[in-house]
Length: 444
Image 1 (cartoon, one colour):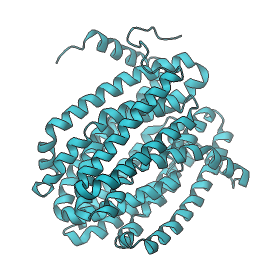
Image 2 (image 1 turned 30 degrees about the vertical axis):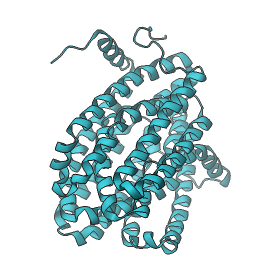
Image 3 (image 1 turned 120 degrees about the horizontal axis):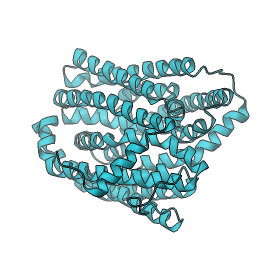
Image 4 (image 1 turned 120 degrees about the vertical axis):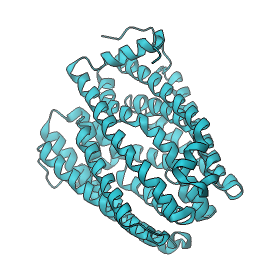
């Protein structure tokens, strides 16, 4: 094993010292549990995706991906930015049981309302858009994911910094889907059955997460007032708008591609995107565990919050660069092993999307870990909205001709814009993310 260089050793030492105190040990435990569970969770896609793409083929896999992309877009309405706004509120309130209970009651009520509105919107869209009507069965069966999203209080577990439980429940969901896949999916026509398995498992996992949260945190749930629900919606709206903008170049990409091309092109894109997303996901436990702590720290000490966000930037940027390079080099091997010979057209798509690992790592620190904790929600939203417009425009121009590759290029350009724009804004706002963290002393 190679020894780390001096700057790397300094960075590793500082990250290790971040877990020295009692509160920092909680962050370290959260990161450890998230990586442990996610490590196991990665075993499921490694087994299920190769089997699923071979059984369903590019066309039916694309049909499933098209419907799932539409459901993911609808899920944003129900999530409504609560995973950020409610997490931030709970992280500040967590020592006050009554305040946390009041927040939980209002957020759950708002999500139930949004879930009902989302179902009405789905039915209307399926009737109004013929292309969506072609995948109506998939969409309706996958609506169980929305039900699970309504019930599952990820925002509560994150705010309370108790991520082990919610990740274990997520692991259970993956286990149920995997068992259902191998037990019942045998031919391309079983794609509807698989959609039903996914929807039912998500709804069950969401109900379990809600029950565990109420018991674990001893919540005293009450029927919230209209004022409390309205407050939750107002606080979440800027971040809801932000995540909706993000969806224009992430979750909605398969929907845009499906509307402009065909199911086979969607299949190639979704398969390639899953490979890249799996690599990016290696960094997500750090981000999830650090966000509530940085939100609280930003309110206490600007200098300490900047110090740790800059340290995190080195870790996320370096890790992302390694992952991007690996994807660029190994794309043919990874695609052939995981997807099989019928998915050869996905190889260039993987390579186009490969730089997302480093770009998302950097933009996550710039946006989620710096702009939001310091209350720069409006600028955050404006940047993401601009990126969404850029992506839709490029997709309309590129996808009809280059199909999956054109969609991938549009997404890459949009994410590059986000990263550069956020970094520029932070420097101009005197929240420079590129401070001399390797040589600076940790603030007291």
